Every structure is written in structure tokens, then in C-alpha cells.
Length: 229
Image (cartoon, rainbow, N blue to C red):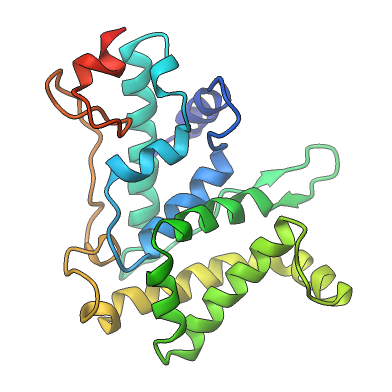
């Protein structure tokens, strides 16, 4: 598990990305949760570019790329472990307003929705699965996302209530979806290798070989992409 110092390092590396389409730590945490509870496995080569946007080629050194990749993958594995039976101890990483102490859950929710966007048909399947709790959890997560983005069409009283309840509601929604994914209900339409069904963290951060595909997802060899610096 990442230590507090390592989480601070990850936060600092994400903040140092030179563009605005990369993720912050809380958004990455929600993104990882969405990837884990999705019944269909999504490989790092596809989702890593979502984390750092168009910044991969702008790192100063190959060591910076490696360090960021390792920390991201280790955090992904930490989230995976926290959602692995029998002892599931999942807790989201939220931002906090240092002046007021208010929990800022909106960025986390935006990250979860970005994960949903990678496999929209999968989430539609969950809604139509016949499992009322799982379907309601998907719909509630989307309702929270719409509130976070300021585009909810719910009554103002409902928006106010959900905004207050969101920090405690989100972990329950994640666990509901995780339970559905791991229950075997999804075994028919989705591949057996689905990430959320793994009894262990499915990916390990390892040193990238110069002839290996670049972890930024460009499709080029590492030595001809981020490793060329």
C-alpha cells in the first residue's frame, strides 16, 4: 500500500503535468474504483493515457515516467485489494477544503464517470441486469456526477440533500457495484479475465524494457517514445 509520503509524491507528480487534461489524485482514485468494479477488464495501455492526458512525451526524464507509472499502478492495486473479498475495506480519497474542512467529493465522482465512459455498454448492461440494487447504484452514481458537473435536473432540495450525503453514499455505491461484479452475474456476457473478478491485484509496476510497448499507450516502443529522453 502506498504510504502517505508516496501518495504525496503521486499527487505532486500529477500536479506537475504541463496540461489541463490530466487527473488529480482524487479523480485518479475515483477512476481506479470505476475500472475495478467494471465487469470488463480494461488494460493499462488503454486507461493510463486518460490519467496523464497528452503529457507523457513532456516528462523531463524516463525516470519520471517510470516513477509516475509505478505509483499509479500501485495505487490501482491498492484500490483493487480494498475491493477484494473477504475483507473489503474500501475508502475513497476525497479532496478537502482546508479553510472549512468541507469534503470535496466532486473530483472523485468525475474520475469514476471517466472510467464508465470507457465501456458505456457494460454499464448499460448492469442497469438492465434485473438487479435493482446494482442498477440503482449506477443511476445514483450518474446522478451525483451530474450534480458535480452542475447539470442535474433534480429538484434543488434533492441536489442539496445528495450533495451533503455524497461522501458517505459513494463508498456504499462502489461496494454495491463491486458485489454485483464479483457475484458471477456478469460471467455470461463478459470475459472471465475481468479485472474485478481477480482474487489479487492484477497488475504490478515493473521496470519498462526499452523494446517494450510504452506505458503511455502510444503504441510505440518505449525507447522510441517516452524512453527517448
